[in-house]
Image (tube, rainbow, N blue to C red; front, side, top):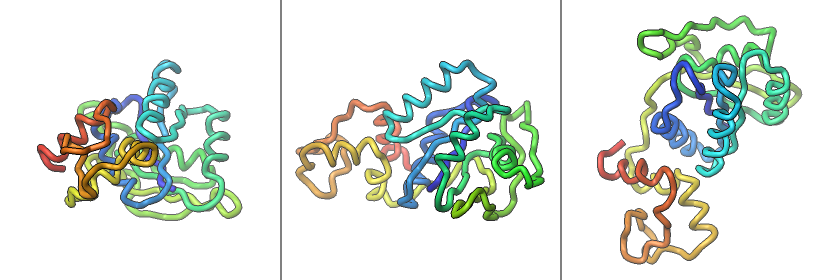
Length: 205
């Protein structure tokens, strides 16, 4: 699975930036989980709102804050079995999270720049760590703007909102429908990220 780690605060969580990471994660064809870090810096209701918002996008999500053993235990359960790859922007606490999950590690952590609200890269390599029996965890270098696929034919396949409608309802008239109000399109436009989806075609990735 791919675990996209984003912070609820410091740096501020931006829907467009999160969507870029989710699109990239979708290209793997693996299960995608969103982990909302730094939950201790916001009100619990804010974390819950994001969990519900992400559910509407088609993603499971969990909020976790520093020093929260219950949330850490719940995360361990969710990651049980197989390989989980942590990815996300720099400065969201991926290395700190890995230290909490695997206390034996002594990874360097970096403070977030107050001026740019972006973290300095801490992880410079990808390495697998044993989390439990038959469970591996990988940390990847942080970066703030991942490159999106340039083939526009892939984009409709990378949004769960579109996939769910295709599975539940009638098919579009044309197999190569981009779901941008073409004749015979069966996809409802009333979903939150439709504006972002359309902008991909209007402005490019």
